[in-house]
Length: 311
Image (cartoon, rainbow, N blue to C red; front, side, top):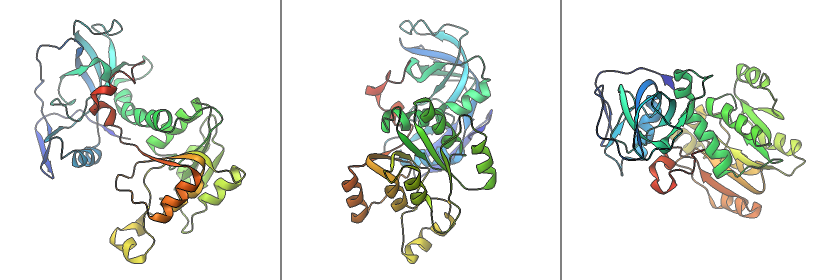
């Protein structure tokens, strides 16, 4: 889970020509009709994720402010903001990666479509920590996977923050969930979930048993959706050593993922550099399956999609 930090002072780092920066100075200006001024109470920051995303976006943006997942209280609203947002309302939101604002400042301006009201049962720290991961899980299950009641979903690494929330969302949609684990502690955590998952599969062995376990659980039909947390892509010893994939024994190979898919199955991947060989494509073709890439910031960067996620 992203570390929750109240970062102050000046910070700057270069990622292939893109500047990561934090400013302690609040950026206050006249609000646009649909904007909201928020006093920041908590901001979730994962430096490694920030660097990765800014590296991906380096061709389209030169400055990447650190701190995008925030929680706070509304101080002022624009004239056309919806009535659910009033002064004093506690909210949680996500700043787009092309924003000039940093969520680590005391005050921040957000578009109303980048905010939701914070549940009173959650602290500002918890809300800021889970909003980005929760949106990724919701995007994977609902918008990319189109999961419906009765579907079977395989979630890779179910004990990770995104895996855990993806399991919850899939179960809320009425899906049957299978998941994998790396360590005994991960297994114990997954076994404590309510409602329980249908099957827990170990991925720490050198020869993956994932596809055979999925086939046994589904009667050989395969799953309707797989949500991964990264995959291994190579089989030759030279490529494995070159890409340091020997260190990824607990990460499934792309062929194992494809083998788990049923007819018209959907593979939701977080592997940005995924390479599919002709045999992989043929297997997907024979299953009528599809591959979707999960990049959570995409919706905040697409102006035409603003409002689609709004309740």
